[in-house]
Amino acid sequence: MESLDRIDRNILALLQADGRLTGAEVGRRVGLSQPAASARIQRLERNGVITGYRAVVDPVALGLNIHATIRLRTTHAQLPHALTFASRTPEIASTLRVTGEDCLIFDVYCPQAERLEEVVDALARYGPVTTSLVLRVYPQKPLTEAASTTS
Image 1 (cartoon, rainbow, N blue to C red):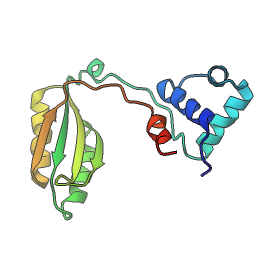
Image 2 (tube, helix red, strand yellow):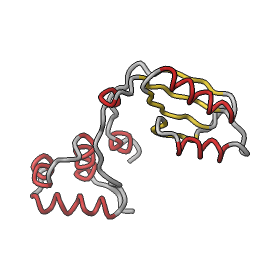
Image 3 (cartoon, rainbow, N blue to C red):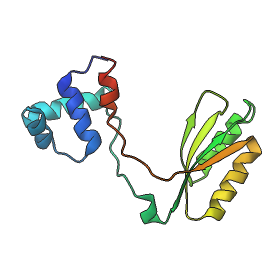
Image 4 (cartoon, one colour):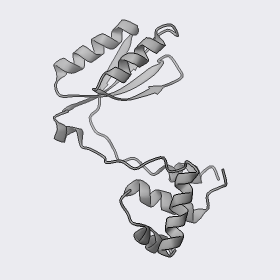
């Protein structure tokens, strides 16, 4: 993939903050015409830099009042089973495979403590688990900030 210039990085930062910006608005903010900005956005999409657009939903508005991370230490034999369980469990929003003592980290949203207990107990069939309640989520920084330090 070709390298990203400063304007590409600015476009990415804008769209990560608000994916609903129009090509005209993006162009205005980065100093390009609407057609030039739209062409850059399309190129970023075509090259797989921008992989999609989505709505960000407040879990509490859906009644999911408990947010936790669950770390699982398992064996290679149990790993596929744990991943299958995670893919079929709606409360598990995301799964990370990690290095270190733990193998997987799950991001979990539940309506009440009893359901979190059920998810924890079910995951414990695959190995030792450690559960942490999330007290607060801080805003995610645009990935372009991290990428600009490597360029």
